[in-house]
Length: 281
Image (cartoon, rainbow, N blue to C red):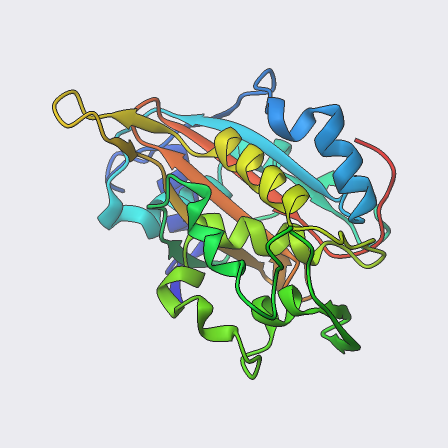
């Protein structure tokens, strides 16, 4: 994981607010009217409620006014976290389960660039092998065990979480770095009171829906191939007291992703923290 830290709080503020000597001068705006049709659909909300993620997951959109350059990702993300519009509008859940805004200066950000190359759900066809998912789509059950507060009651969750699973190597390390895989994994694992599915289908459908909401593509005019233009970062942020965002507690299901579209200069933020469903949108 790459660590991006500001040499001082003043430098971070200069980068965010536009000091003439600080290089790129990013300005960010919260796009409050932006909707995410898939995430906000009734069908998805019903699934998220069942999986104990409803009320704990959200997507937001921001715009920025300068060209995004991959080699400046650390400065870009620090500028994002320390911009006044982000302080006022970036959502997170408090320890009491209330939605609030970031509202603090970020001293350090941990940034991990994810792979984002998959354009087909056939990526998951390998799960239809003996011992994980049957041909009819039913997930093979196993004896219950817990991993980091997450109940493992079937072979699918073993593949996702346990390196000593007989089928863990169905997905390579690079496969597991794919944003598509990460979304699938998060939805499968759910929240603290998750009611797991018996069949694979609902997880695949929800993953596809959310992926389409967040990732931007364009067609090559010559080859007609679909290419992904979004860049995805998994992020966490620290204030003066330590880890702050997405949650002060590190957990598999506490996550925040920034999905950057360099063409229309938009950032989509996908956020979730582990816990019981809050039964609100």
